[in-house]
Length: 406
Ligand SMILES: [Zn+2]
Image (cartoon, rainbow, N blue to C red; front, side):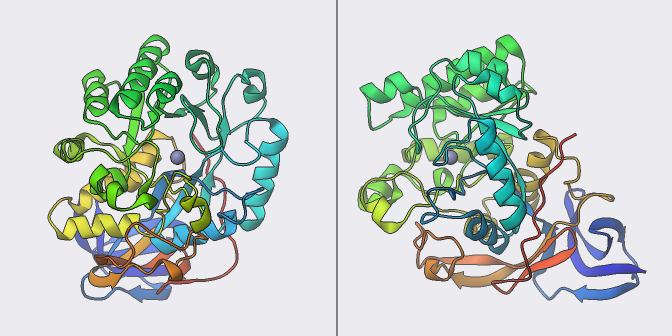
């Protein structure tokens, strides 16, 4: 007898099959074609499918001195609402997470307030000794300034020092001074530099939000197993033309040309990870020029909408949003397998809904997708076997746990 059995169509080894998932103690314990006994059974409806929860490897949750923009509580609720069961917290907060004390404070808030599971990061910028004193789940380097204003003056030294995988924001600080609009070259030069160091040290490197044709090309050419990268839904779906009509779409790296966008889609099969770069600001902050857009509550739905338009397969979505992030970052208990955490979502692939940011959990009460109709909606989210979101409602208390790495 399992604590919970979910019955319906689910994703299994690249295919959608019909059957039953047995869950106890927060873990997936059995996949079965025949019925399983459960203390509780959930039967999914027509057009619904059970998929692994998303692991979003790029999320800014602010908090600390920027609670008006987002808190760990509001941001992790937004995550569950969007079908994301694990988030990777970024360290360019105020204060910056680049010393042991601040890192400890971050741990304490997450322990109390997180609704989703989480990985914690530490910012590297000439603070190598300090970095060795913390046991972060991943490390972040900015090669040029973004929100928070910090950047690494010596990428190679900082990268060399990192005890675990480094996520890098690849925009070159010197070129940003020269070209404040951050054209392609700003990203491409930084990616080249990062790849050169990665060749030298052969240490795990993750390149954030690749947005340019040339940048993607050189990463794919290198094709090294220790190098991973991500692309955001906004770079896949919006261009600089959209930004011309809407100032709110200011992001770093900026939106690119149609040509860049088409190139990303042409090589979509080679892109291992999709991540939101959820970067919430208040409306006032956006109007005064802050870069970044919220994404947690729309990103999976946008991908399901893309699936409905024939642009992506469900297998693509599952791999890029869940299986690959778990593999790349070595998450011990994540992955849609027997013995792993029962982090699941139930999605209605046919349901159409309108994006209404005023109903979202994020404190950024706006969205680039406002009023847009999307086809495909996350109906339920389960975190380690516990129903934590149903029909837009967050259920229960903060129950997020820090991930374990292998
Ligand atoms: Zn970011």
